[in-house]
Image 1 (tube, rainbow, N blue to C red):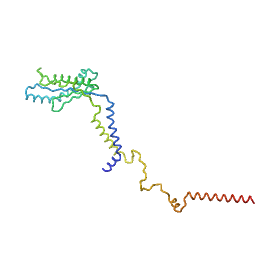
Image 2: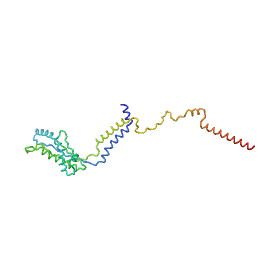
Image 3: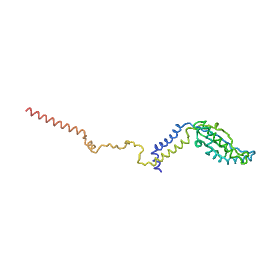
Image 4: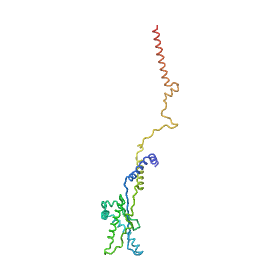
Length: 258
């Protein structure tokens, strides 16, 4: 355990670099992406209750119907009709990828949301799906004997009133990418062999009190102790040779004089 921690401490730049790269990926995607909008139509599951008892029973019946309504709202047939009603050049499959239908637990509310590059386009898509769902539920809840239905849908909020701009930067996505990048960095730091150096090592200078490698040899120390420096001996030998040459030259001159 201690060796793993020491490895992470020694290779912390690698972990930090992986986390930084992962952090920049969603940021760059958000900066280069186009603006998008979300429009939401809110529907209310209504009943024909006239008193408290029947209202309570009607609420339970409405909550039991909601899962079925959610399935009907995302069906391919309804999406095809909604795509035609929206007036946009899209297919039912393309519309389904931009629409989300949900309901909060314990309520009788259904939210139909659609996203698009413009606010008007998002509103048309959400409203078209909501209108088609309202008509389909009215047909499905109609009694067989032709009498009026006891449950139906009402539009509480049209799509034009529920438009919002989607933030370009999603903090949750950025956090997920960053955590994943740090995890990858930790994995690489532990998997890469210890003999593999991620960056060149610096040359070490001798510390104070530490003997340097550039120490004089034993011969040099012996010469210093005897008092003869190598350079001085070289100079002495040169002067001796010069004196001999001068003496020989003098002898030749005397011979010529004789």
